[in-house]
Length: 235
Image (cartoon, rainbow, N blue to C red):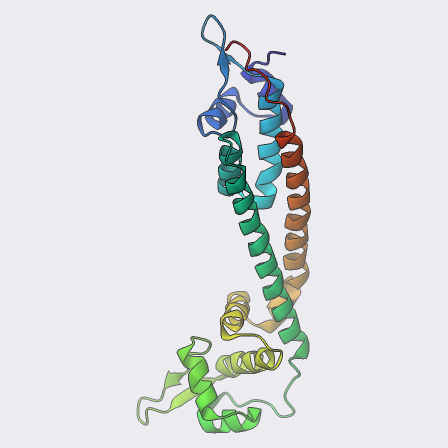
């Protein structure tokens, strides 16, 4: 069965130039040529295009391209390695989400209003930890208290105290400093725990959608791998 570039393009609302670009990128196997020199595709090319488009929501355009290129070159192990990487990243994102959720749900309001600024000694005493622990967290980049220009003492603002409380909660939950740094970055980007908490459901929905897309992409790729390598028309 011979297919023209327009036949592949119409199925997905693409341009024929996009189909040609995908072939040149290795996403599609090389096309055959008609006696007059026009590209001629086969059902396998249509299957490759469907597979690529199914992989994009799961892995992103660049990784989906690399997966298809590897498969078409016969490097299936490389394609599987790329897929493993995406799954590992999704698992890492889920762990970060769970850590943020744990921190926010376990962050009880203080019995007394926190002062606008405090020093390392009183803050460490409040949490029942050593000042050396706060200095270690600073070296790890979790918190960045300013220095008093006159005394040189570390000064913790209300935002610093919030970050310290979150870090303390996560450490008690068994999370490492690298994980805590990711959580605190999420909190700072959102503008605090309250705005971040409001985005948790959206964040979780994105991860769920990506996980579901990985299932769809895997099914499409499995079908493509089982497609007979039809002789390219015009070859």
